[in-house]
Length: 395
Image 1 (cartoon, rainbow, N blue to C red):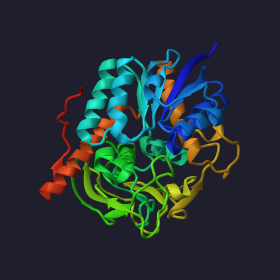
Image 2 (tube, rainbow, N blue to C red; image 1 turned 45 degrees about the horizontal axis):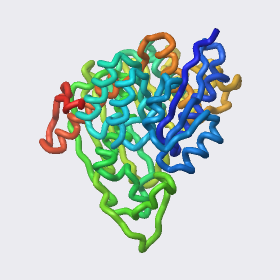
Image 3 (cartoon, one colour; image 1 turned 60 degrees about the vertical axis):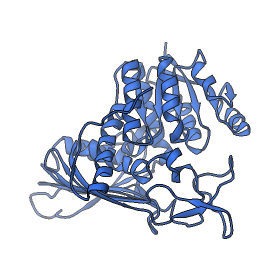
């Protein structure tokens, strides 16, 4: 008989609904996993959004008080998709209740808060997981396998970037992502976390960094509470407020294994729509990946005859990790939400097998150590070692 896991989701905006659909699909795409999930209760402080989510996504109950999710006796897993400013309070309540917790990145508003949250989960002995969905793309996983098998030789260089236009329009709304009290860091927390997570997975730990930052758009229109998304746009003449965190971060990085690299992220660049990408070079090969072409991997592993001496574009198919869970055909592409399904599967299997899979809050804490070194570099203007974080009070 399959193990049943009750799910509660907090925050029913775009990301909360994506997570909910992902859990619901596990019973189909991973029907042979030995696990069945059940959507028990969802919460949102906007009443109509909570109730619409219950009806459309198949939750048994909805509420406007997130504490009802934590307290529900049939919920074993609490999925947090609320604004960053609420993460610490929510994780404290979830871990105190002895329940497993998924939290969208960034886990904390800053490195110290992330460290405190990680400690809560560790001391409670619960499973944790973080929304670093880009790592689950089948072609990324294929690249990871090639690296681990030594097909690229000894790694020498890595370049990671995440360029997106979601903040490029000066009339884009001043949502919580742009507010220090609610989001904490800007792109250092929001999308540098994805870039550094990918680098950690493919290359390994980072020894030291040197970094800079910039705000390109300093004022934005004020949003209407409870309406729209982070992609909503205002108009000239709307009341505005100040952007309080960074639009851009660049960094040079040196990995512990000697690999040399660079990271660059921006939410206000004009041109790339969602260029979460990397390039990795080794002594025997190289690879390039760009999420805008999610189902492709550019691979350079030259043959001895010299005929195939150049990059080849591989197209995703059932021979690549996880692809066949969704369709049986070569070049029948997967999309963003399939990555969230894979993410949910790996989290749920951590619980079912009682073995913590990555990325956990521990992985988020190691990323926070890199982010903290970058922030120190903004002040010092020089190279900074990645080192353990001095925790803030976890209470």
